[in-house]
Length: 231
Image (cartoon, rainbow, N blue to C red; front, side, top):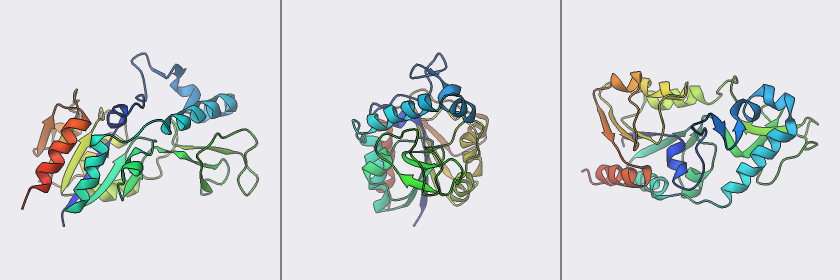
């Protein structure tokens, strides 16, 4: 069974109604990114950070997967599929994808500020005073700017063993996620689905690249059913 590695970014979730990570003016839904997505911002105003992610968590209850998410689940009928996403939403989970690696964390999880391995499912608001079992404040389970990406090695390992790659809705400019495609084995088939694709240095060096200038909800089903039709 061939292995398909899917790399997804904000574009696939935007079609479901989730705003992209950063607006054109460098703000994230009205906030300076560093004030809500950095250890320094957390130390400076914990209440602001908690409220920001509480609002994002509430938004997840109002959105559903789109045709792009759903098509990836169908691909599992014939291929081994692993989804590596930069998104912190749970739309791939809602759609039913079996194997998902979240590079940048998950909105529906929180973790201890002092014992990072203590991670909890969390679907409601998180407040100052909510503690882990060891008595430490809980924080969003999100990889902030300046922090290590703990799932990166797992993602690299998956890419090194991929046969077919599908890149969806990402600018390919956010590192280290953008570097993952450089681990694709020579000769891999690579589909890049984005209405405004950015051909990064890593992508420009791949002879198997096929660029599809469409949104995920249109381009992904097209690619998936082409792959499923193969004998």
